[in-house]
Length: 459
Ligand code: OOG
Ligand code: NI
Image (cartoon, rainbow, N blue to C red):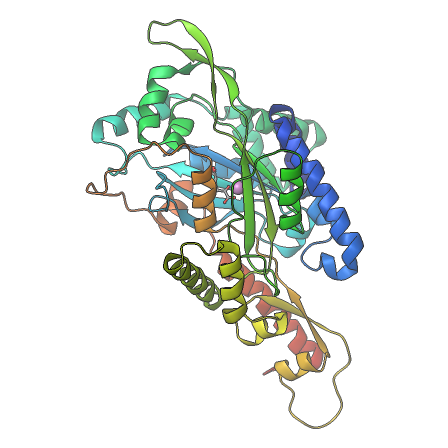
């Protein structure tokens, strides 16, 4: 029996092999990431691996895929279900700055800490909203929905194997191999000709709409390795002549704990594609839709921590607007050192970050009432940061935009289509989980265990 955990690990590795053959720069990125991680872990000792040791980080990837509506997201959910990946988080990119994108998104990922430790593979999954009038008029919506309805991204055999794998939490080796082959092939770049006129019509609205609805198949858009030092990675990639976008998205480098997520990307080369011309002939050309991305992950923030994060971002924007010649990274580092706690203990005591607890010493002697802060301060209890496993809407918007040529058109006077987490849950027929509740449950379970061990019910 190949368990769903093992299926997920093999799926991530198979996609990595596929993407490396399709986009050679990805292989360079993985190689440089591996070197950076090795260097960080050997220079920093065990502390360097606090947010993820060599075993987890070396294999760690996130993928990004983009599909149409309304039936495709539910099929995607069944396939990822086979790999123990559940939908978590809701991201609406339609109001994104600097460029609105006509999609909503969720991430499919393991939720259980033991599963995350085995292999945390996650896939950022964007879903087109053809009903959004700010992007598509009624006529284009209709043609788009018809086009998407007529295609088949995932064959019935793949879907039924996926259902069986999910129901039985795994498959026998022969079926497992078949499932993995079919699932991987479903995300390969297709050689089918692209209808040039249709693709261009959608591209005038949004390059992402064309990438989703302008072709008869889907493909992996990028596959992102994780590094323990993204600034070092950035320098090493530049030194190899790979032009990165001018910024690292998310928190700045600063002299305090790493939180949430920092990401950067580079534009992949144009890829050869075949086109069907209006006269029916086939020609060759290229499209530039896929790219390379890399990320560093930090501590998950509570909603209070997230509010602080948003306030700091707004403050950075204000200071940059006041001083146009200021260096953004320096301003950000300054704002952070003024506003963000400088230690993990302070993040914890102010209720800004998620942690679990372990008992280092036995219950301290003496009759004084014990509280958690005291146990932490006296090192009887050790804090362990919970790694942020999700995405950031602002960074996602930045990643999307940095790789678009920016010639879409949006009509803000027309109405948007309402979409939220509940809508998405109904559309894919499974609960989209709130990431904060996943982290909170982990903290709560750890605190309960600590209370039981110490026999202090109100700790
Ligand atoms: C997804 C962009 C968002 C991330 O890591 O934030 C993303 C896409 O380009 O399809 O991947
Ligand atoms: Ni990404």
